[in-house]
Length: 132
Image (cartoon, rainbow, N blue to C red; front, side):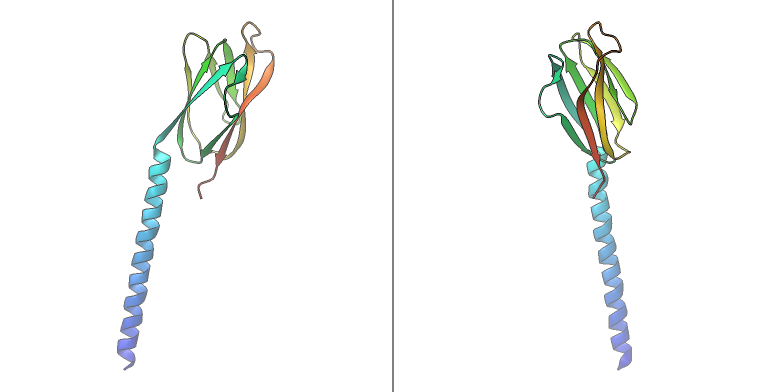
């Protein structure tokens, strides 16, 4: 009588392992799908200030495209990732990166208009949160 009980226990353990594995793979696939898509964010600067929320929240692993639009020429610097972009009223400029490092990263201006490199002001923060 012990044999059928052992066989049932093995079958149950095997089924649980396979079912748990398939759930784990499904959850991983959802995470991969969520982080593989490019997140496009459009941000406008008017009168040397950000229009809207000053904190941009992202998830680690996301591919990010931030499109900057301004009413005055300025160089922007995303600290931590060391990304710089010059933007002008003539057209948008884009910062593209993969959010690999987590944390809170300031985006500062490095001179509006003819102030080239002077007048560092924090315009926004980009928060990159770990995958849960």
